[in-house]
Length: 127
Figure (cartoon, rainbow, N blue to C red):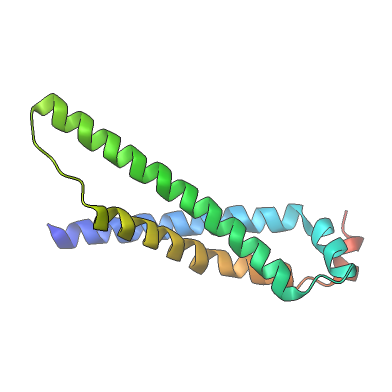
């Protein structure tokens, strides 16, 4: 049973990570001109990479926090309706948020790297 839950969670993390990466790639594509202006005014590759990584982390942390809140709410509701006694483990919540952060870092790195490598001239030429 535990192995099945790990497999389901792994697939969910993979799908969520790919979704985050796609959202961030669209963000980079839509903001190409902004990135070009920032690079032309002296923005370093590291700064742009950090900006997009932070955006991916905030997106993942927000999703993780909503998931934790929804899980706690659902758990308490079901327990109350069924008359069960439940406890919520703080370590599990912490682990969920750590995995959320890791997902943001891993899947947000490629779009952030792509944004940081844009040439200012090519980025400003795009419409």
